[in-house]
Image (cartoon, rainbow over the protein chains, first blue to last red):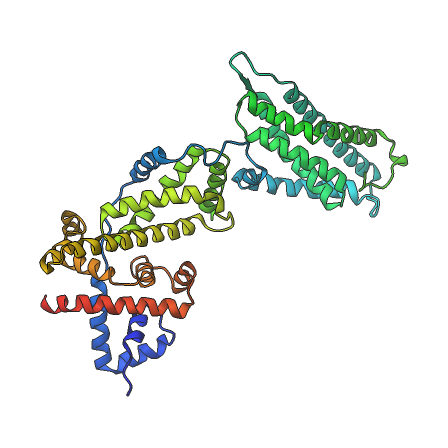
Length: 256
Length: 192
């Protein structure tokens, strides 16, 4: 009978032997290997070293020491990125809600033509409600953007954006919903506008409540350079026009 | 999973310039990496320094951290490398000292006094000292693989992935380390 090798015994002790069943079987039958294995296990047990305890407060103590050594300018302060915001748990919850509402939105807005509902008035009312909601959303977004563009620092050199921030937070989820539905319908134009808008809303919603002049100027520059205000205004006007048009005159939707 | 999402979000906040957010990561993971650092270096003083060094290195490399991966695993690797580097430096320092004083007795004294005596005694006395000495004879890969498998209970696959080895090579490194440890410790067992 071939005895087990030291490597087989070692790996078996860790439960990593490729042929674990055969090794176990052999150990049950071979007294010499069983004795060798017992000895190995004993010496392996000696190889453990207890780690000195570190209490709950240890992390805080380490942080105090590390903090004092961190360079100041490694990662300059900037507004929160969309990617960062997407990673928050809030986004997960908002996404779940948006998905539900999105289905309702798509049914109401886009399938009415192909599959006339039993009660046409209900479909029209539903569609109008959605259009009105989108119009209001764009109106509110426009107002926030206008306020931001006209904000000026106080005497202390800071501007308080608590109100705009609160509004932006409210608008972000709805915006994402509308953007998703536009994307699903392949409407690149609307998707693009809502995407630009969302980026600004997210930055405002998650940025500092108080901004200094430079931060504010940077935000205003971003809004201005992308022409977001104008785009939102144009899209808002189109949506309003659509929502006021009599049902009989309506063209099939899905592209603007 | 939840915690990892949180870690990733905190990393993003730090990269956005929120330096204080880094404290959340430090508070959350320091105990874990201290244990690893201690297991590799064998003494508290070195382990404490490795912990700080790892956090500093992680901070500077944070922009290279891929959000899809696990922050804890990433930090673990950094800590392991810092700990292994520290042992290398310690060995190099000792080589210089031995070369300066070739007296075998001095040599022995230096080896023993390499880490604070009180700590060594506190942890595991003679056995701990023997383990520590033997650990220092292991290659870098053997030491890392052994600590991860024997002391940290990582799987062969995790070890292979962390050290960039094939599973067979990881097993082989562990076996060689255990073999060296066994040869060092078995005589002590016989005298008990």
